[in-house]
Amino acid sequence: MDSDNTKDQVSRRGFLGVSSGTVAAATGALIAGGAAAQEQTRSVRRANDRSATDPGPTNGPQDAQNPDSTWPPSTDSKSLVRTFKYPFSLANKRTYEGGWSREVTSRELPVSKSLAGVNMRLTAGGVRELHWHTADEWAIVLYGSARITAIDSDGKSFVADTKKNDLWYFPSGLPHSIQGLEPDGTEFLLVFDDGDFSESETVLLSDAMAHLPPEVLSKNFGVSQPALKNLPKNELFIFQTAVPGSLEADQKAAAGALGKATRDFAFRTMEMPPTKRTKSGEVRIVDSSTFKVSTNVAMAMVTVHPGGMRELHWHPNADEWQYYMSGKGRMTVVSTGARARTMDFQAGDVGYVEKTLLHYIENTGDSDLIFLEMFKSSFYQDVSLSEWLTHTPPELVMAHLNIDRATLDAMPRDEMVVVPG
Ligand code: MN
Ligand code: MN
Image (tube, rainbow, N blue to C red; front, side, top):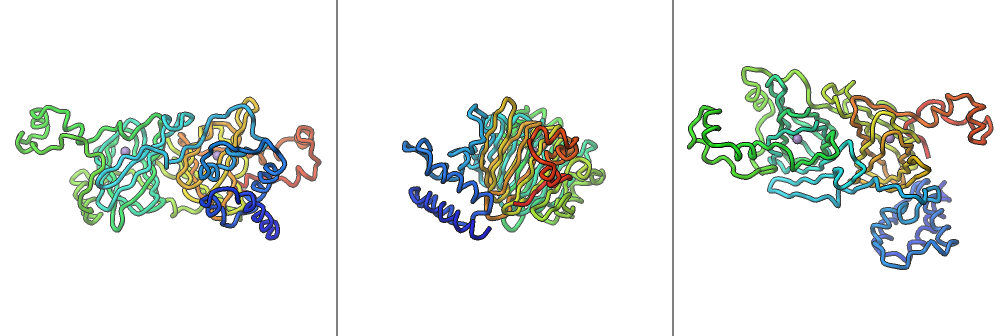
């Protein structure tokens, strides 16, 4: 493996010698087995195939980040498969004093019909203003810590502090807020159970107040009109204010005489052992069986060590919306009608696989690949290709695949989730 890697890196460097300095620097790092093999295939093709040239204008850094789009594997189909990747880097960022927000919805990624994602940053004290919406909101903290507030349908309050990898879930219509805590606020990913969702179409407290006659507000709250004269005239959305005090004080003040909400809207992902662990990685599955309020969104957080691969599988029950948290990977999606496409992913990218389509995700980098598989479903479900083939009459499988008994017997009989390189 070592000597192969060295050889592959030499050929990779030679191949990239004609490219920009940026590209050469980015690929100077060690390449794991799978990636080196792919790169070797590509450079052999470039050396032997006169058609594998691109003499016209091209975006070198983009090509380097997307080698499987630039020179697709020969197994990809020539008929088109629409894109199933959108990087948050290209999303329209809305910036405010106190933070920013950007989203990848069906407008940015038309294939993503069932779920939409929002990536948001809040400074320490920065607030995503009190609001509610028509979609259910699932969230994971990517950085720092945040205080979240909500009330349940009985009007009982929920206030909690969340840290990296913690989740929260706010069912549609329940009002809530998010605020960055010390020392450096927070960044998080929101996933909504509607591909057409937009953060700019939520009901904001400030907006609602600005669009009601003052005499109505006065009557509703039982206070004088002059007392309400400084209500904001425009939406706040994200704004900077002071860092909140102690959690206990906020919980007590919000609960009042009604008491605290009985349902827990937060989930501590890392306090749960991995659902499955192999020597090449692990998966944590969180759905409504463990995170009770998460009735319409299920998550699998997958870690694939260098050289490993999330095995070939599909999901019978729902489309998969992916978010890449770290590392690099590639995925082939085998679509219906003899169509297939391979695309490359890295931290900050969104991927998408429609329900029932066969796919794998291979770690093509030199560090752990960590990504989220998200589903609009109360439960997680997948079918493993290996498990299916090894639990079908062997003669039938051998007749299809032209393989001998020893080869079939060598295939994993149980779902591995993550297979070694
Ligand atoms: Mn929300
Ligand atoms: Mn999957």
